[in-house]
Image 1 (cartoon, rainbow, N blue to C red):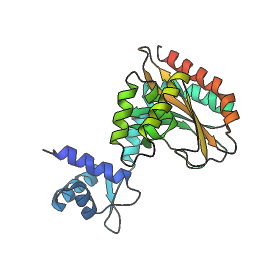
Image 2 (cartoon, rainbow, N blue to C red):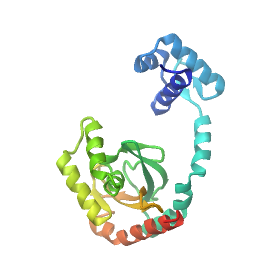
Image 3 (cartoon, rainbow, N blue to C red):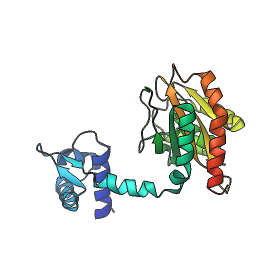
Amino acid sequence: MQTTLLKGLEVLELLVRSRTPLGVSTLAATLGLPKSNVHRTLSTLVEAGYAVQDQKGGYLPTLRLWELGVQVMSRHPLRRAAAPFMHRLHQETGETISLVILDGNDSLYLHQIASPMPIRLSSAVGERAPAILTVSGKTLLALSHDWDSRARRFHSELQESQVKLPQLLKELKRIRDDGYAMAASRWRPGVNSMAAVIVDENDRAVAAIAVAGARERFTDARMRAVLPALLNICTEIGSALGA
C-alpha cells in the first residue's frame, strides 16, 4: 500500500522531471490517484516549500530541492576525488568532461566541466540516459564483473531498444578487451565521445570519466590522442579512492 510519503515523493519527482507546470488532473491521471489525494499532497508540498502554484493553477518545484541537492553532491566522495583530475583533463583537452555512474539501468551524470567551445546536445549534470545507449554507460557495464547478465537484463527492460542484443554483447566484449570505449555521433547526434572507468580498492568499476566534443573537432584521431591522458586520469582518481 502506498504511504503518504511515497505519494509525495512521486508527485514531487513528476514536477521535477516536467518541463512545464503540472495541474492536479494531469498528476492524478499519471499516478492513478484520486484528485483529492493529489491536491492534499500538493498543498503539503507547497506548505513545506518544495512546490509553488503558478497563476494558471499549475504546480512546479522550488529551488529548495536544488539547495539540498547541491549540499549532497558537494559531499559525494566520488565527485570530491574526481573533480581536480577532471579539471586537469579539461585543461589538456578543452572538451566537455563528465563523471558518470550507473544508477539502475541508467547512466547518471554526477559532475561535468563544460567545454568553452560549441557542442551540441551534451548531457548535463543530474540527467540520466539508458546505460546501453551511452559510451560511459556501456564502458561501466562492460567492465563490471557480471556484465553479460546485466547487459541482457538492461536490454530486455529497455523499451524500443535502438540496438540488437548480439550487437550490444559484441560491443561490450570489445570494450572489455580494450578497457575503454569510443563512440561517433550515436547517442548525441553530432557529438563524438569516449570513456574509461574508475576502479576502487575492491577492483570494481564505480564510475566513468567521459570526454565529449563536436564531431568536426573531436575526431577519431583526436580521441586516440587524448586516450592516454584519459586512462591516466582514471587511474589517478582510483588511487585517490584507495585503489
